[in-house]
Length: 422
Ligand SMILES: *Cc1c(COP(=O)(O)O)cnc(C)c1O
Image (cartoon, rainbow, N blue to C red; front, side):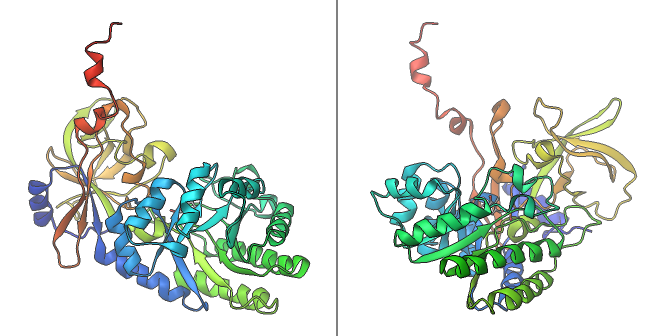
């Protein structure tokens, strides 16, 4: 049974102050989870989690994570800026971008961030962007192609993915950079999304450790850190099991002892850039049931829509749905729980067994703390909802207000349209 940090009465009171829909994040749970994650990987000489900012790009969340020792993984200028604003600076920012404009590389370089290149041609692109020199530290994103089997559907087969360098190109890239005087090297890969099998990550680590060993042997280039990317999944469905961090860490440590230590690469710094497992289970979208209709199916219409949470519509993702105050009621109704977008994929749940829902009931959509509010959009003139942070002392802080119609119209020239003759 999925949990929610507020009881029914407290949630009702909260909705009197902050009307639905809104996101609620649980600071205490985020911190406790982050501590478990860090503890599991403390079996490595140096470990750092670079939180994937795209998962929940809110500076308050980033500050909470930074205070737990997290860095930030970014892929755009605004994400780099958000990290900086949140006090995450220098080498604590990983710039894992692709198809990157020159000015974004310049900003990352000027701020001392680690630049993770997505292609061999980006070496000269970066050099040009920086006025003829390369940074001291460079990381490359490895695409293992067909060498990595069993990848899941969100990211797809590595050989069909747009990211990273081939194995041959990795060697060439380190060689070029060594000749150019680059001093410190990293190796990154990310070949999964929302993967729950711990062995998958152990296998991936093995692949990159072996590559790091071979790079040292063949080129004399010492890779100082390995970034294992994101992709650790969370159990969205009730029958799924959370990834055991200790199991993943111990499995990777065994490969480290087998490959990295004999290769003379110890101490090798181990990085992750996870988003989903860090905040995903600790954020909820709270909405209100405002319509019910009885046609060929039973529908419950919420005051929210896919603009607030597009994962179900975009990927067909499952999110657990509960009704506040009816947690223990029998699930003896079958509903499609839907939003207001003029798109039939705008359904938070399809043919879901739920307790009887009455108008005004507060409907809680679980595991929305990563890739939730962040993916929102304004199609159909929909205004995205705000975000609330439940602090450890039980108080609630609004960390993003809801959008207004003025926000939506702010890019239009409404004064000029009066004089415009069509
Ligand atoms: C999306 C992404 C992540 C985070 O993925 P999660 O599934 O949220 O852990 C990390 N690194 C890169 C390069 C990404 O694109």
